[in-house]
Length: 79
Image 1 (cartoon, one colour):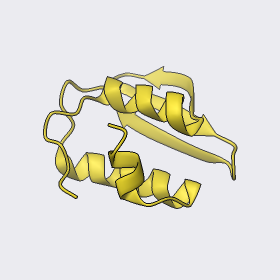
Image 2: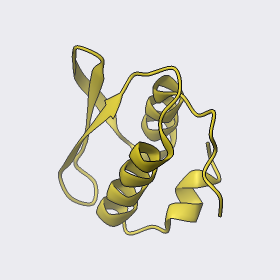
Image 3: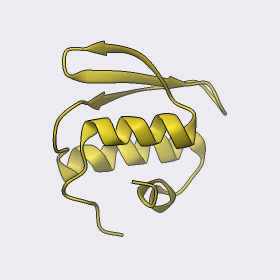
Image 4: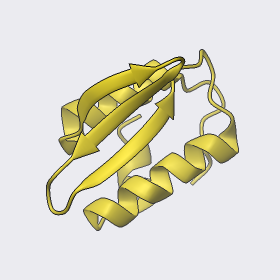
């Protein structure tokens, strides 16, 4: 599945919070720190940029998929 080229950091934070149980812990500069405890503890930094680079988005999706035991395509379908 091809990664979107127009996905913003705020949109990724919104989807991860709404659909995958991540909670915004704090913001350090332009990075939003998210955390979840289900099924295991996982902390993630998402750049709050107007457009995320494809490699950055891919790394975020891969980290969430690994922590939640999902496929990247399942997460990408919700963006």
